[in-house]
Amino acid sequence: SQQGEEDPQALSIQEGENATMNCSYKTSINNLQWYRQNSGRGLVHLILIRSNEREKHSGRLRVTLDTSKKSSSLLITASRAADTASYFCATDAKGSGNTGKLIFGQGTTLQVKP
Amino acid sequence: DVKVTQSSRYLVKRTGEKVFLECVQDMDHENMFWYRQDPGLGLRLIYFSYDVKMKEKGDIPEGYSVSREKKERFSLILESASTNQTSMYLCASSKPTQGSQPQHFGDGTRLSIL
Image 1 (cartoon, each protein chain N blue to C red):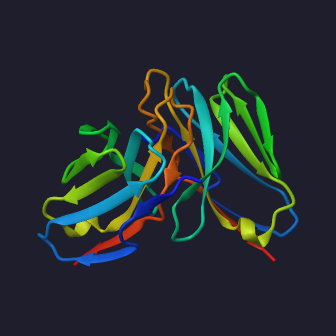
Image 2: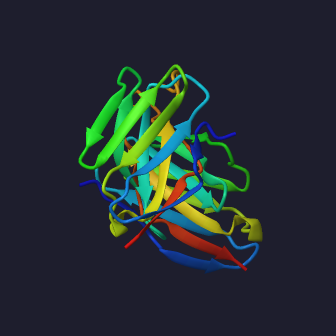
């Protein structure tokens, strides 16, 4: 089964509002990553947070990680129509060695209305 | 910037055909991955490779094989295509560290098996 589960599956907001997406996972991790996918395209890496970090920022993105609850959230502030995309969390797993293997969640589809 | 190139954006094949999907990366990454993406199921790992001529099964390897003869190229082979292999196929690459590197994706091949 998938390591990461995301919530909500779909989110629709107005431009300028904030969007929050959540991810839960099951096993111990080295890090958690968030990716974005525009319709019909490949995934693009957004941000990586290590297991010993609690919060990380990148531009309008804010990611939190709570390893005790095995959960993470992605906040996009002041959303724009161009943020419309699907967002995926991905976890590696401790013991996965150097393979770089990740397990992806099913994603949250975000629609930002102009 | 890392570039991962998949040979075809769209491909239509017939049941029973042998299908080759090609992926090339230009950043000398050791790790390469093949996923399929289906609505409601997220990304599922088919095969991955952590070095030339090395390969490991992912979560759904049945009906597929792979080839990694050169470091930059990772091929996915559908031995005898079936309609349930109609899907979006995504290739990715990454550096070989302890799961702490992002994966870089191609734009995907949307494969239809008729």
